[in-house]
Amino acid sequence: GGGSWYSGGMVTVNGGVVNANGNNGGAGIGGGGSNVGGSGGTVTINGGTFTSVGDDCVEVCEDAALTINGGTFKTEADDYDAVYMGSGATVTINDGTFTATGDGRNALYLSVGATAVLGGGVFEGSPAIGAENNDFSGITFKGIYIPSPARWQTANRVEIILGEAVAKIGDTG
Image (cartoon, rainbow, N blue to C red):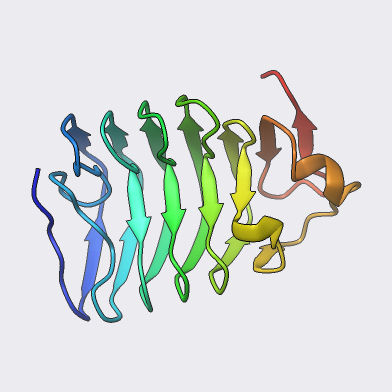
């Protein structure tokens, strides 16, 4: 439990295993209620396994920036997301596996005013990618053609393979 906040600064995570198992226990950076945020700040994750059973796995708040270059991110909590982006947050995902197993939760969720650049990764949830007020305008796909926006916005699985031109969209792996 408890929250770990910082203002500004840079953090790089190069692998490892982080598990959080209590309420207010996001496992994003360090566990125990970690939020990427405060005022500004930049976090880069280069692999690792991050699991939360009581909160969002990673929360990116306010003017913080997060880059994910691989890893496994999973939340098993109802009402929480694998990666939650608050208004003003910026996330770049180049690779990784993002899973939300809780009822009606997303692998990636954007609040209004958040920005996500997706260049690779597997996203699974119900639906896989969600947005406040169904406003998906903050999402950009890096070098990938998306055949049907309405379909990926409701799919339970979205797979983006870096270097391929088309995303795989469907309800099973």
